[in-house]
Length: 241
Length: 241
DNA sequence: AGCGACGTACCGACCGGTCGGTATCGTCAC
DNA sequence: GTGACGATACCGACCGGTCGGTACGTCGCT
Image (cartoon, rainbow over all chains, first blue to last red; front, side):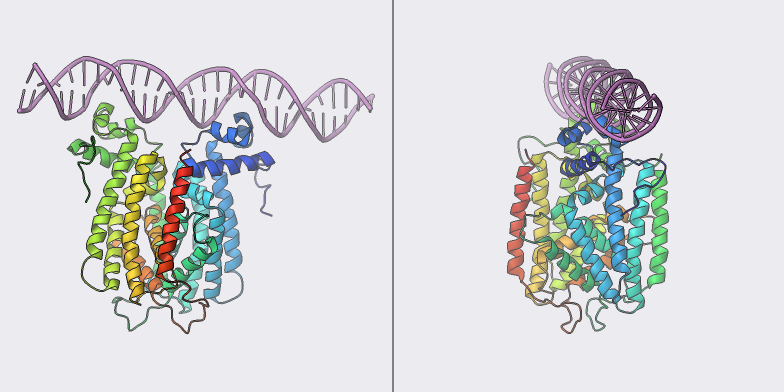
Protein backbone atom coordinates (compact mmCIF):
# COMPACT_ATOMS: atom_id res chain seq x y z
CA UNK A 1 0.00 0.00 0.00
CA UNK A 2 2.58 2.56 1.03
CA UNK A 3 4.94 3.23 -1.84
CA UNK A 4 7.84 0.88 -1.25
CA UNK A 5 9.84 1.33 -4.42
CA UNK A 6 10.85 4.86 -3.65
CA UNK A 7 14.27 6.28 -4.51
CA UNK A 8 17.48 5.06 -5.98
CA UNK A 9 18.58 2.82 -3.16
CA UNK A 10 16.79 1.48 -0.14
CA UNK A 11 15.06 -1.27 -2.04
CA UNK A 12 15.98 -3.28 0.99
CA UNK A 13 14.14 -3.84 4.29
CA UNK A 14 11.43 -5.79 2.56
CA UNK A 15 12.47 -9.34 3.34
CA UNK A 16 11.00 -11.44 6.08
CA UNK A 17 14.27 -11.34 7.96
CA UNK A 18 14.39 -7.58 7.79
CA UNK A 19 10.95 -7.50 9.38
CA UNK A 20 12.03 -9.85 12.11
CA UNK A 21 15.11 -7.79 12.80
CA UNK A 22 13.03 -4.66 13.09
CA UNK A 23 10.58 -6.31 15.44
CA UNK A 24 13.31 -7.71 17.64
CA UNK A 25 15.18 -4.42 17.66
CA UNK A 26 12.03 -2.53 18.64
CA UNK A 27 11.44 -4.81 21.57
CA UNK A 28 15.04 -4.71 22.77
CA UNK A 29 15.33 -0.96 22.35
CA UNK A 30 12.17 -0.50 24.37
CA UNK A 31 13.38 -2.85 27.07
CA UNK A 32 16.96 -1.76 27.50
CA UNK A 33 17.39 1.40 25.51
CA UNK A 34 19.04 1.99 22.19
CA UNK A 35 22.60 2.47 23.37
CA UNK A 36 22.47 -0.31 25.90
CA UNK A 37 21.41 -2.77 23.23
CA UNK A 38 24.29 -4.11 21.19
CA UNK A 39 23.95 -5.17 17.60
CA UNK A 40 25.13 -8.57 18.73
CA UNK A 41 22.14 -8.93 21.02
CA UNK A 42 19.74 -8.00 18.27
CA UNK A 43 21.04 -10.48 15.77
CA UNK A 44 21.33 -13.23 18.36
CA UNK A 45 17.76 -12.63 19.43
CA UNK A 46 16.72 -12.85 15.80
CA UNK A 47 18.72 -16.02 15.26
CA UNK A 48 21.11 -14.62 12.69
CA UNK A 49 24.51 -12.96 12.65
CA UNK A 50 25.73 -9.44 12.21
CA UNK A 51 26.46 -9.96 8.56
CA UNK A 52 22.78 -10.52 7.97
CA UNK A 53 21.75 -7.34 9.69
CA UNK A 54 24.28 -5.19 7.90
CA UNK A 55 23.08 -6.69 4.68
CA UNK A 56 19.66 -5.14 5.17
CA UNK A 57 20.46 -2.06 7.23
CA UNK A 58 23.25 0.38 6.71
CA UNK A 59 23.86 0.94 10.40
CA UNK A 60 22.40 0.58 13.83
CA UNK A 61 20.87 4.04 13.46
CA UNK A 62 19.15 2.83 10.36
CA UNK A 63 17.13 0.40 12.43
CA UNK A 64 16.01 3.24 14.63
CA UNK A 65 15.12 5.41 11.70
CA UNK A 66 13.08 2.72 10.07
CA UNK A 67 11.11 2.19 13.27
CA UNK A 68 10.31 5.88 13.46
CA UNK A 69 9.55 6.23 9.80
CA UNK A 70 7.07 3.39 9.76
CA UNK A 71 5.23 4.54 12.85
CA UNK A 72 4.93 8.09 11.60
CA UNK A 73 3.82 7.10 8.13
CA UNK A 74 1.10 4.92 9.55
CA UNK A 75 -0.18 7.46 12.01
CA UNK A 76 -0.13 10.27 9.47
CA UNK A 77 -2.07 8.20 6.99
CA UNK A 78 -4.68 7.33 9.59
CA UNK A 79 -4.98 10.89 10.83
CA UNK A 80 -5.58 12.23 7.35
CA UNK A 81 -8.29 9.66 6.81
CA UNK A 82 -10.14 10.71 9.93
CA UNK A 83 -9.53 14.41 9.47
CA UNK A 84 -10.79 14.43 5.91
CA UNK A 85 -13.89 12.36 6.56
CA UNK A 86 -17.45 13.60 7.02
CA UNK A 87 -18.96 14.95 10.20
CA UNK A 88 -18.63 17.97 12.45
CA UNK A 89 -15.23 19.18 13.55
CA UNK A 90 -15.91 17.84 17.00
CA UNK A 91 -16.73 14.40 15.67
CA UNK A 92 -13.71 14.28 13.42
CA UNK A 93 -11.33 15.50 16.09
CA UNK A 94 -12.68 13.01 18.56
CA UNK A 95 -12.43 10.14 16.11
CA UNK A 96 -8.89 11.08 15.14
CA UNK A 97 -7.84 11.45 18.76
CA UNK A 98 -9.32 8.12 19.76
CA UNK A 99 -7.62 6.47 16.83
CA UNK A 100 -4.18 7.84 17.56
CA UNK A 101 -4.56 6.65 21.12
CA UNK A 102 -5.72 3.18 20.15
CA UNK A 103 -2.91 2.96 17.63
CA UNK A 104 -0.40 4.12 20.19
CA UNK A 105 -1.48 1.38 22.56
CA UNK A 106 -0.82 -1.14 19.82
CA UNK A 107 2.68 0.21 19.37
CA UNK A 108 3.77 1.05 22.87
CA UNK A 109 7.27 -0.23 22.28
CA UNK A 110 7.73 2.02 19.28
CA UNK A 111 6.50 4.96 21.31
CA UNK A 112 8.93 4.16 24.09
CA UNK A 113 11.85 4.02 21.72
CA UNK A 114 10.71 7.10 19.89
CA UNK A 115 10.83 9.56 22.73
CA UNK A 116 13.72 7.97 24.49
CA UNK A 117 16.18 7.61 21.64
CA UNK A 118 15.22 10.19 19.07
CA UNK A 119 18.32 12.19 19.94
CA UNK A 120 20.55 9.29 18.96
CA UNK A 121 19.74 9.67 15.30
CA UNK A 122 22.31 11.44 13.14
CA UNK A 123 21.43 14.96 12.02
CA UNK A 124 20.12 14.08 8.62
CA UNK A 125 17.74 11.35 9.66
CA UNK A 126 16.56 13.28 12.67
CA UNK A 127 15.62 16.17 10.46
CA UNK A 128 13.56 13.87 8.31
CA UNK A 129 11.75 12.41 11.29
CA UNK A 130 11.11 15.83 12.75
CA UNK A 131 9.67 17.04 9.47
CA UNK A 132 7.33 14.08 9.30
CA UNK A 133 6.23 14.62 12.85
CA UNK A 134 5.67 18.31 12.29
CA UNK A 135 3.47 17.56 9.34
CA UNK A 136 1.44 15.27 11.53
CA UNK A 137 1.03 17.88 14.23
CA UNK A 138 0.06 20.54 11.76
CA UNK A 139 -2.74 18.46 10.39
CA UNK A 140 -4.02 17.90 13.87
CA UNK A 141 -3.69 21.56 14.74
CA UNK A 142 -5.67 22.51 11.68
CA UNK A 143 -8.55 20.49 13.09
CA UNK A 144 -8.42 22.39 16.34
CA UNK A 145 -8.23 25.71 14.54
CA UNK A 146 -11.19 24.76 12.43
CA UNK A 147 -13.19 24.13 15.56
CA UNK A 148 -12.05 27.40 17.05
CA UNK A 149 -13.05 29.30 13.93
CA UNK A 150 -16.42 27.60 14.07
CA UNK A 151 -16.86 28.76 17.63
CA UNK A 152 -17.14 25.24 18.99
CA UNK A 153 -13.77 25.21 20.75
CA UNK A 154 -12.40 27.79 23.11
CA UNK A 155 -10.28 30.49 21.53
CA UNK A 156 -8.35 31.62 24.59
CA UNK A 157 -5.80 28.82 24.26
CA UNK A 158 -3.71 28.66 21.07
CA UNK A 159 -4.37 25.61 18.96
CA UNK A 160 -0.70 24.78 18.96
CA UNK A 161 -0.68 24.60 22.73
CA UNK A 162 -3.65 22.29 22.69
CA UNK A 163 -1.89 19.95 20.31
CA UNK A 164 1.31 19.91 22.33
CA UNK A 165 -0.69 19.37 25.49
CA UNK A 166 -2.64 16.45 24.14
CA UNK A 167 0.23 14.72 22.38
CA UNK A 168 2.40 15.20 25.38
CA UNK A 169 -0.08 13.10 27.30
CA UNK A 170 -0.30 10.56 24.49
CA UNK A 171 3.42 10.21 24.10
CA UNK A 172 3.91 9.50 27.76
CA UNK A 173 1.51 6.60 27.71
CA UNK A 174 4.30 4.09 27.44
CA UNK A 175 5.83 5.25 30.69
CA UNK A 176 2.93 4.24 32.87
CA UNK A 177 0.40 2.07 31.05
CA UNK A 178 0.76 -1.67 31.46
CA UNK A 179 -1.31 -3.92 29.18
CA UNK A 180 -1.98 -6.39 31.99
CA UNK A 181 -3.32 -3.66 34.23
CA UNK A 182 -6.86 -3.09 35.35
CA UNK A 183 -7.75 -0.69 32.58
CA UNK A 184 -8.27 -1.77 29.00
CA UNK A 185 -6.40 0.30 26.47
CA UNK A 186 -9.51 1.59 24.80
CA UNK A 187 -10.96 2.74 28.09
CA UNK A 188 -7.93 4.94 28.58
CA UNK A 189 -8.34 6.22 25.05
CA UNK A 190 -11.89 7.30 25.78
CA UNK A 191 -10.94 8.91 29.07
CA UNK A 192 -8.10 10.82 27.47
CA UNK A 193 -10.29 12.07 24.67
CA UNK A 194 -12.95 13.06 27.18
CA UNK A 195 -10.35 15.16 28.95
CA UNK A 196 -9.18 16.68 25.70
CA UNK A 197 -12.64 17.57 24.48
CA UNK A 198 -13.59 18.86 27.91
CA UNK A 199 -10.57 21.09 27.91
CA UNK A 200 -11.55 22.41 24.51
CA UNK A 201 -15.03 23.43 25.54
CA UNK A 202 -15.74 27.13 25.64
CA UNK A 203 -15.38 28.17 29.28
CA UNK A 204 -18.57 29.08 31.08
CA UNK A 205 -18.75 32.88 31.02
CA UNK A 206 -20.01 33.10 34.60
CA UNK A 207 -17.04 31.11 35.88
CA UNK A 208 -15.09 31.91 38.99
CA UNK A 209 -11.70 30.65 37.88
CA UNK A 210 -10.76 32.21 34.58
CA UNK A 211 -10.19 35.93 34.69
CA UNK A 212 -8.39 36.56 31.43
CA UNK A 213 -10.41 35.39 28.47
CA UNK A 214 -9.88 35.48 24.76
CA UNK A 215 -6.39 36.91 24.73
CA UNK A 216 -5.35 35.94 21.25
CA UNK A 217 -6.90 33.85 18.55
CA UNK A 218 -5.76 31.39 15.94
CA UNK A 219 -3.76 33.86 13.90
CA UNK A 220 -1.40 34.35 16.79
CA UNK A 221 -1.26 30.65 17.30
CA UNK A 222 -0.05 30.14 13.78
CA UNK A 223 2.60 32.82 14.23
CA UNK A 224 3.74 31.18 17.41
CA UNK A 225 4.06 27.86 15.75
CA UNK A 226 6.27 29.27 13.06
CA UNK A 227 8.42 31.02 15.61
CA UNK A 228 8.80 27.81 17.54
CA UNK A 229 9.73 25.99 14.39
CA UNK A 230 12.40 28.55 13.67
CA UNK A 231 13.78 28.44 17.17
CA UNK A 232 13.72 24.71 16.89
CA UNK A 233 15.79 24.79 13.73
CA UNK A 234 18.21 27.18 15.37
CA UNK A 235 18.68 24.93 18.33
CA UNK A 236 19.23 22.06 15.96
CA UNK A 237 21.83 24.03 14.06
CA UNK A 238 23.67 24.95 17.22
CA UNK A 239 23.68 21.37 18.30
CA UNK A 240 25.36 20.46 15.04
CA UNK A 241 28.71 21.73 16.20
CA UNK B 1 11.24 13.72 55.83
CA UNK B 2 14.09 13.62 53.33
CA UNK B 3 16.78 12.14 55.51
CA UNK B 4 20.14 13.03 54.03
CA UNK B 5 22.31 11.18 56.49
CA UNK B 6 20.63 7.94 55.69
CA UNK B 7 22.76 4.85 55.40
CA UNK B 8 26.37 4.11 55.94
CA UNK B 9 27.82 6.08 53.06
CA UNK B 10 26.61 8.90 50.85
CA UNK B 11 27.62 11.77 53.07
CA UNK B 12 29.09 13.16 49.91
CA UNK B 13 27.78 15.41 47.15
CA UNK B 14 27.83 18.54 49.27
CA UNK B 15 30.90 20.37 47.98
CA UNK B 16 30.92 23.19 45.46
CA UNK B 17 32.64 20.98 42.94
CA UNK B 18 30.01 18.33 43.35
CA UNK B 19 27.40 20.92 42.53
CA UNK B 20 29.28 22.02 39.46
CA UNK B 21 29.70 18.46 38.31
CA UNK B 22 26.00 17.86 38.68
CA UNK B 23 25.14 21.00 36.76
CA UNK B 24 27.54 20.17 33.96
CA UNK B 25 26.37 16.58 33.80
CA UNK B 26 22.75 17.67 33.63
CA UNK B 27 23.43 19.96 30.71
CA UNK B 28 25.48 17.40 28.83
CA UNK B 29 23.02 14.58 29.46
CA UNK B 30 20.23 16.77 28.17
CA UNK B 31 22.21 17.78 25.12
CA UNK B 32 23.66 14.48 24.02
CA UNK B 33 22.02 11.82 26.09
CA UNK B 34 23.32 9.88 29.06
CA UNK B 35 25.07 7.09 27.23
CA UNK B 36 26.52 9.34 24.56
CA UNK B 37 28.14 11.51 27.20
CA UNK B 38 31.41 10.15 28.50
CA UNK B 39 32.66 10.74 31.99
CA UNK B 40 35.69 12.31 30.41
CA UNK B 41 33.56 14.97 28.75
CA UNK B 42 31.83 15.77 32.01
CA UNK B 43 34.99 16.27 33.99
CA UNK B 44 36.70 18.21 31.21
CA UNK B 45 33.70 20.48 30.93
CA UNK B 46 33.87 21.03 34.67
CA UNK B 47 37.59 21.69 34.56
CA UNK B 48 38.65 18.73 36.69
CA UNK B 49 39.68 15.13 36.18
CA UNK B 50 37.99 11.80 36.66
CA UNK B 51 39.58 11.31 40.03
CA UNK B 52 37.67 14.31 41.29
CA UNK B 53 34.36 13.05 40.05
CA UNK B 54 34.80 9.57 41.44
CA UNK B 55 35.70 11.13 44.71
CA UNK B 56 32.21 12.60 45.02
CA UNK B 57 30.14 10.12 43.06
CA UNK B 58 30.30 6.38 43.18
CA UNK B 59 29.56 5.94 39.50
CA UNK B 60 28.17 7.57 36.42
CA UNK B 61 24.75 6.27 37.38
CA UNK B 62 25.11 8.04 40.65
CA UNK B 63 25.15 11.37 38.88
CA UNK B 64 21.92 10.47 37.18
CA UNK B 65 20.32 9.35 40.38
CA UNK B 66 21.26 12.50 42.19
CA UNK B 67 19.73 14.62 39.42
CA UNK B 68 16.48 12.70 39.70
CA UNK B 69 16.46 12.66 43.45
CA UNK B 70 16.93 16.40 43.79
CA UNK B 71 14.30 17.26 41.23
CA UNK B 72 11.74 14.97 42.81
CA UNK B 73 12.45 16.12 46.33
CA UNK B 74 12.00 19.73 45.35
CA UNK B 75 8.81 19.19 43.40
CA UNK B 76 7.30 17.01 46.11
CA UNK B 77 8.05 19.61 48.75
CA UNK B 78 6.48 22.37 46.69
CA UNK B 79 3.43 20.30 45.84
CA UNK B 80 2.77 19.52 49.47
CA UNK B 81 2.98 23.19 50.33
CA UNK B 82 0.40 24.13 47.76
CA UNK B 83 -1.83 21.14 48.39
CA UNK B 84 -1.94 21.72 52.14
CA UNK B 85 -2.56 25.45 51.93
CA UNK B 86 -5.86 27.26 52.31
CA UNK B 87 -8.48 27.75 49.65
CA UNK B 88 -10.93 25.70 47.66
CA UNK B 89 -9.83 22.48 45.99
CA UNK B 90 -9.98 24.18 42.64
CA UNK B 91 -7.73 27.00 43.78
CA UNK B 92 -5.24 24.67 45.39
CA UNK B 93 -5.11 22.33 42.41
CA UNK B 94 -4.67 25.22 40.04
CA UNK B 95 -1.90 26.76 42.12
CA UNK B 96 -0.10 23.43 42.43
CA UNK B 97 -0.41 22.75 38.73
CA UNK B 98 0.87 26.17 37.75
CA UNK B 99 3.76 25.76 40.14
CA UNK B 100 4.84 22.38 38.84
CA UNK B 101 4.76 23.79 35.35
CA UNK B 102 6.75 26.89 36.23
CA UNK B 103 9.23 24.76 38.10
CA UNK B 104 9.51 22.37 35.19
CA UNK B 105 10.34 25.22 32.86
CA UNK B 106 13.15 26.21 35.18
CA UNK B 107 14.51 22.68 35.03
CA UNK B 108 13.91 21.67 31.47
CA UNK B 109 17.26 19.91 31.24
CA UNK B 110 16.50 17.77 34.24
CA UNK B 111 13.14 16.86 32.74
CA UNK B 112 14.75 15.91 29.47
CA UNK B 113 17.23 13.65 31.17
CA UNK B 114 14.61 12.22 33.44
CA UNK B 115 12.34 10.73 30.83
CA UNK B 116 15.04 9.89 28.40
CA UNK B 117 17.46 8.06 30.65
CA UNK B 118 15.46 6.77 33.58
CA UNK B 119 15.86 3.24 32.27
CA UNK B 120 19.63 3.49 32.53
CA UNK B 121 19.52 3.46 36.31
CA UNK B 122 20.34 0.18 38.00
CA UNK B 123 17.41 -1.69 39.57
CA UNK B 124 17.88 -0.45 43.09
CA UNK B 125 18.10 3.23 42.34
CA UNK B 126 15.33 3.08 39.81
CA UNK B 127 13.05 1.58 42.38
CA UNK B 128 13.81 4.45 44.73
CA UNK B 129 13.09 7.04 42.08
CA UNK B 130 9.89 5.32 41.08
CA UNK B 131 8.73 5.24 44.66
CA UNK B 132 9.40 8.94 45.07
CA UNK B 133 7.58 9.73 41.89
CA UNK B 134 4.64 7.60 42.87
CA UNK B 135 4.35 9.43 46.13
CA UNK B 136 4.27 12.68 44.24
CA UNK B 137 1.55 11.46 41.90
CA UNK B 138 -0.52 10.17 44.76
CA UNK B 139 -0.54 13.50 46.49
CA UNK B 140 -1.66 15.14 43.29
CA UNK B 141 -4.30 12.50 42.72
CA UNK B 142 -5.67 13.06 46.18
CA UNK B 143 -6.34 16.64 45.22
CA UNK B 144 -8.30 15.56 42.18
CA UNK B 145 -10.24 13.03 44.20
CA UNK B 146 -11.06 15.65 46.77
CA UNK B 147 -12.53 17.83 44.05
CA UNK B 148 -14.48 14.91 42.67
CA UNK B 149 -15.89 14.10 46.07
CA UNK B 150 -16.87 17.72 46.47
CA UNK B 151 -18.72 17.56 43.18
CA UNK B 152 -16.59 20.27 41.61
CA UNK B 153 -14.73 17.98 39.21
CA UNK B 154 -16.22 15.45 36.86
CA UNK B 155 -16.51 11.95 38.21
CA UNK B 156 -16.68 10.03 34.96
CA UNK B 157 -12.90 10.02 34.51
CA UNK B 158 -10.80 8.31 37.18
CA UNK B 159 -8.55 10.66 39.10
CA UNK B 160 -5.57 8.52 38.28
CA UNK B 161 -6.17 8.97 34.58
CA UNK B 162 -6.42 12.71 35.02
CA UNK B 163 -3.07 12.79 36.77
CA UNK B 164 -1.36 10.65 34.16
CA UNK B 165 -2.89 12.75 31.43
CA UNK B 166 -1.76 16.02 32.88
CA UNK B 167 1.72 14.96 33.86
CA UNK B 168 2.20 13.30 30.53
CA UNK B 169 1.71 16.70 28.98
CA UNK B 170 3.99 18.33 31.54
CA UNK B 171 6.76 15.82 31.14
CA UNK B 172 6.86 16.25 27.41
CA UNK B 173 7.42 19.99 27.68
CA UNK B 174 11.13 19.61 27.16
CA UNK B 175 10.63 17.99 23.78
CA UNK B 176 9.03 21.00 22.15
CA UNK B 177 9.35 24.14 24.26
CA UNK B 178 12.26 26.44 23.45
CA UNK B 179 13.01 29.27 25.90
CA UNK B 180 13.80 31.68 23.09
CA UNK B 181 10.48 31.01 21.40
CA UNK B 182 7.55 33.33 21.08
CA UNK B 183 5.77 32.10 24.16
CA UNK B 184 6.95 32.90 27.65
CA UNK B 185 7.14 29.91 29.93
CA UNK B 186 4.52 31.17 32.32
CA UNK B 187 2.07 31.74 29.49
CA UNK B 188 2.34 28.10 28.59
CA UNK B 189 1.83 27.21 32.24
CA UNK B 190 -1.41 29.13 32.34
CA UNK B 191 -2.62 27.64 29.08
CA UNK B 192 -1.86 24.14 30.22
CA UNK B 193 -3.65 24.64 33.50
CA UNK B 194 -6.61 26.14 31.69
CA UNK B 195 -6.81 22.99 29.62
CA UNK B 196 -6.50 20.82 32.69
CA UNK B 197 -9.15 22.64 34.66
CA UNK B 198 -11.42 22.78 31.63
CA UNK B 199 -11.08 19.04 31.20
CA UNK B 200 -12.00 18.58 34.84
CA UNK B 201 -15.23 20.53 34.64
CA UNK B 202 -18.41 18.57 35.00
CA UNK B 203 -19.67 17.95 31.46
CA UNK B 204 -22.75 19.83 30.43
CA UNK B 205 -25.62 17.37 30.87
CA UNK B 206 -27.36 18.45 27.64
CA UNK B 207 -24.28 17.73 25.60
CA UNK B 208 -24.28 15.99 22.25
CA UNK B 209 -20.91 14.26 22.50
CA UNK B 210 -20.77 12.27 25.72
CA UNK B 211 -23.16 9.38 25.85
CA UNK B 212 -21.80 7.34 28.74
CA UNK B 213 -21.65 9.39 31.90
CA UNK B 214 -20.65 8.62 35.43
CA UNK B 215 -19.42 5.12 34.88
CA UNK B 216 -17.37 4.66 38.01
CA UNK B 217 -16.37 6.93 40.80
CA UNK B 218 -13.28 7.55 42.88
CA UNK B 219 -13.37 4.24 44.71
CA UNK B 220 -12.81 2.45 41.45
CA UNK B 221 -10.12 4.90 40.55
CA UNK B 222 -8.21 4.08 43.67
CA UNK B 223 -8.54 0.37 43.03
CA UNK B 224 -7.26 0.87 39.52
CA UNK B 225 -4.28 2.77 40.73
CA UNK B 226 -3.32 0.02 43.10
CA UNK B 227 -3.71 -2.56 40.38
CA UNK B 228 -1.52 -0.53 38.09
CA UNK B 229 1.07 -0.21 40.78
CA UNK B 230 1.12 -3.94 41.26
CA UNK B 231 1.33 -4.65 37.56
CA UNK B 232 4.08 -2.09 37.42
CA UNK B 233 6.04 -3.88 40.09
CA UNK B 234 5.53 -7.17 38.30
CA UNK B 235 6.83 -5.77 35.07
CA UNK B 236 9.80 -4.42 36.92
CA UNK B 237 10.46 -7.79 38.47
CA UNK B 238 10.30 -9.54 35.13
CA UNK B 239 12.68 -7.05 33.66
CA UNK B 240 15.15 -7.92 36.39
CA UNK B 241 16.14 -11.16 34.69
C1' DA C 1 51.71 13.60 60.68
C1' DG C 2 47.55 12.67 58.77
C1' DC C 3 43.54 13.06 56.21
C1' DG C 4 40.50 14.90 52.73
C1' DA C 5 40.73 16.50 48.00
C1' DC C 6 42.02 15.93 43.94
C1' DG C 7 45.49 14.41 39.65
C1' DT C 8 47.72 10.66 36.73
C1' DA C 9 48.27 6.50 34.53
C1' DC C 10 46.31 2.65 33.06
C1' DC C 11 43.32 -1.62 32.61
C1' DG C 12 40.05 -4.76 30.73
C1' DA C 13 35.86 -5.14 28.45
C1' DC C 14 33.07 -4.22 24.83
C1' DC C 15 31.05 -2.28 20.72
C1' DG C 16 29.91 -0.83 15.92
C1' DG C 17 31.34 -1.81 11.74
C1' DT C 18 34.17 -4.33 8.08
C1' DC C 19 35.64 -7.82 5.12
C1' DG C 20 36.70 -12.04 2.90
C1' DG C 21 34.32 -15.94 2.22
C1' DT C 22 30.38 -19.42 1.35
C1' DA C 23 25.87 -21.28 0.12
C1' DT C 24 21.78 -20.98 -2.46
C1' DC C 25 19.17 -19.76 -6.40
C1' DG C 26 17.64 -17.94 -10.93
C1' DT C 27 18.81 -18.04 -15.71
C1' DC C 28 20.47 -18.83 -19.99
C1' DA C 29 23.26 -21.10 -23.56
C1' DC C 30 23.60 -25.42 -25.63
C1' DG D 1 18.50 -31.06 -18.46
C1' DT D 2 22.56 -29.55 -17.16
C1' DG D 3 26.45 -27.02 -16.24
C1' DA D 4 28.42 -22.28 -16.02
C1' DC D 5 27.90 -18.07 -13.86
C1' DG D 6 26.54 -13.94 -11.70
C1' DA D 7 23.79 -12.06 -8.00
C1' DT D 8 21.77 -12.17 -3.61
C1' DA D 9 21.71 -13.72 1.16
C1' DC D 10 24.12 -14.58 4.91
C1' DC D 11 28.28 -16.07 8.03
C1' DG D 12 31.84 -15.17 11.52
C1' DA D 13 36.30 -13.64 12.72
C1' DC D 14 38.42 -9.52 13.53
C1' DC D 15 39.87 -4.44 14.32
C1' DG D 16 40.41 0.20 15.96
C1' DG D 17 38.75 2.85 19.27
C1' DT D 18 36.32 4.14 23.38
C1' DC D 19 34.55 3.88 27.83
C1' DG D 20 33.73 3.24 32.90
C1' DG D 21 36.27 2.34 36.56
C1' DT D 22 40.52 1.79 39.67
C1' DA D 23 45.05 2.03 41.98
C1' DC D 24 47.94 5.03 43.58
C1' DG D 25 50.53 9.32 43.96
C1' DT D 26 50.61 14.19 45.52
C1' DC D 27 49.40 18.57 47.37
C1' DG D 28 47.74 21.41 51.12
C1' DC D 29 45.48 22.49 55.20
C1' DT D 30 45.08 21.55 60.12
